[in-house]
Amino acid sequence: MQRFSALSLFRHGLGRHQGWKPQWRQASPKPTYDAIIVGGGGHGLGAAYYLAKVHGIRNVAVLEKGWIGGGNTGRNTTIIRSNYLFDESARLYDHAVKMWEGLSKELNYNVMFSQRGVMMLAHNVHDIQSFKRHIHANRINGVDNEWLTPEAAKAYCPPLNIDPKVRYPVLGAALQRRGGTARHDAVAWGYARAADALGVDIIENCEVTGIRRDASGAVSGVETTRGLIASRRIGVSAAGHSSVIMDMAGVRLPLESYPLQALVSEPVKPVFPCVVMSNTIHAYMSQSDKGELVIGAGTDVYTSYTQRGGLHIATHTLEAICELFPQFRRMRMLRNWGGIVDVTPDRSPIIAKTPVPGLYINCGWGTGGFKATPGAAHLFAHTIARDEPHPINASFTMERFRDGFMIDEAAAAAVAH
Ligand SMILES: Cc1cc2nc3c(=O)[nH]c(=O)nc-3n(C[C@H](O)[C@H](O)[C@H](O)COP(=O)(O)OP(=O)(O)OC[C@H]3O[C@@H](n4cnc5c(N)ncnc54)[C@H](O)[C@@H]3O)c2cc1C
Image (cartoon, rainbow, N blue to C red):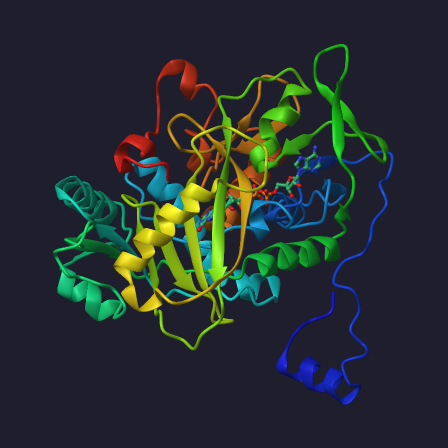
């Protein structure tokens, strides 16, 4: 693998940067693999990397129907935090935050993880009670989270409007200082490059169209647009299309897929120091390193596979953003887009074995799976390699929806994420 360092940059600079090689091979499918991962997003590429690195399973293919990172990994607003209510969630998401803290070094690739703090605004009595409950629960679980008065929130984020006479007054905020953002493309590219160096085949433009099972019912391979590929272990990490793929093996998932959209403004000088979220309004914002304001909206109300959201959803979000941050009223939006998010009834993910031997699923991350990328990938690889879950993901099964052991972050937050 080409190493990135000050010295290698200097050396390549002498050659006018003409000597850099592609970061990963354009692999063609082999007839058989020890494990196949369906979906070349951060979660799938990361799982392939940890299968090779941690478990020594290197004869692995990642099959991606488009280009890597072209799904939700490259479409999200990159908010990273771990201040979820339930013990299971706190363990899961904080496992990921701890991994984010060393990820650039681990991959020798700058994923631009920036712990600038995530502030969640409270606009009503319910928000205050709910966030304070989260803060207490988080502290018991060793996860940082603190309560800010409106004045303290404004001191942390000066553009914030704390005038009490507006439609959504800011009555306080919960701040996780270890939360922040990362560069989404770099996460996909960093994992792809590191997995490729360990022998993983990353196969783009290869859509999975069927899952083969043998006489015992166990998986035996996948049908793809590039032919049949055999494997006794198949991990599906396909976000909004998870239920479509699992249906190919006769497995029904408790998922609904919705469009979720985001938009960015024209770039401006650094003006916005942290991440601000308002679950009540369904708007969140940060500023990218290029200077664009990155704004996220809520999900559409209807299930759909179109990768764009309703105009009225974005309009509602922008109205709220203008009220919270009046100084941005005259900024122009450069572009907007959507992704398809896979939402479970309790808004917690599934990382688990399935009733089909050899078939594993990592899905249900809905509007909030980017933050979990390294942790989810690490746990999914463990589940595939050992044919049993890691203690951290043991509760995140499909069966919890049958047995009633929900991890109900939807009820805890009273919003979709
Ligand atoms: C607008 C938006 C904003 C978001 N904001 C945040 C945020 O701020 N913070 C956060 O934590 N999360 C956020 N999310 C959610 C987050 O993006 C996802 O949960 C996460 O990226 C999922 O990663 P993944 O690798 O599982 O999925 P993806 O990156 O979507 O990868 C799945 C891949 O599977 C491929 N695929 C599908 N079907 C097939 C097939 N048949 N054969 C082969 N390949 C197939 C797709 O092409 C895709 O590349 C947001 C999502 C959206 C859409």
